[in-house]
Image (tube, rainbow, N blue to C red):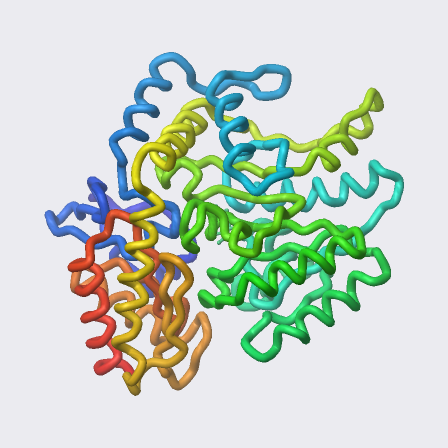
Length: 418
Ligand code: PLP
């Protein structure tokens, strides 16, 4: 190949001169141009749920592309979008009655933030603050960086980020502190919304907290009229053991963001689900109360058809059973590390497992991260540690043998780098 002109995301090109080319994907594998294959232990940035190129989703994409491409979604509609909205409302926690489409996890969160502020403005009681959880991550646009943890990812853009109120991450033993802080910041009724990643904070280090804390946060939010935005971009579609993580707390958020696994990880699509109260606040003959948001590819019919096929797979195939079995395998794999001196903080929620390598300097930019990644890739494994945090977030078709191979290699990595 001639010299590449591609600028890759989250990539320091000076340190990664050779970027492997993938020519085919199938099931749990990426096939490289050199004829070797790589086991995708992180579902290609957490998007692939059933496995790469599930035949039913591929077929839906092909069939739809034969009759529909993109259609302007202001003033027009189409069957895949209508059917998908109906399906999402039926699958999501009760009370989320309206579906607004966009095209990435970040845009689904931007939409959620704008809905929250628009709601309060339109009901004549404007609120201006967003409450966020320490270590949160919601995307890389200016708005989503503003509500995410500040650090190396966004230090250069700090002048453009808006101020937020932060509540501590509810680490074991600190749960009450989290709840008290939220109670305090929401008391003056300036907070439009609390945004959280339910049960698992992904990019922040696969940090996990109990469902009961989420349930308590919702109670406090309700008491002060603060909206709860559940960013289920990563946690949705079975990752935490249930379709949506919120189900485990038995709560309905006011706004729910979904993307990544929405199309089974095939093509980009996102949806922000909202309550009828939020929709009604924007429903008016006064044009100023319109929800002013769009992107050119809103509700792409081919993407909606892919998502509908994903929903059908959830309805017709034993996906829940697969997830339960995968969760048990992950828990068993992690048990191997309970006495391993090179690792600490083993943890799992549903299909997600994580553990920390005892490293001299933890943190996202720790030198150990790229070294570990290269070590795994040399062995045909796609594992992308968050600094010294190793995690497995595989597609649901991964087998017990493949997971064993991953855990064996993690053990080796501990001996070599720990
Ligand atoms: N929210 C969460 C919880 C995420 O994990 C991510 C991506 O990892 C996003 C939002 C942003 O999604 P996208 O990368 O599709 O913009």
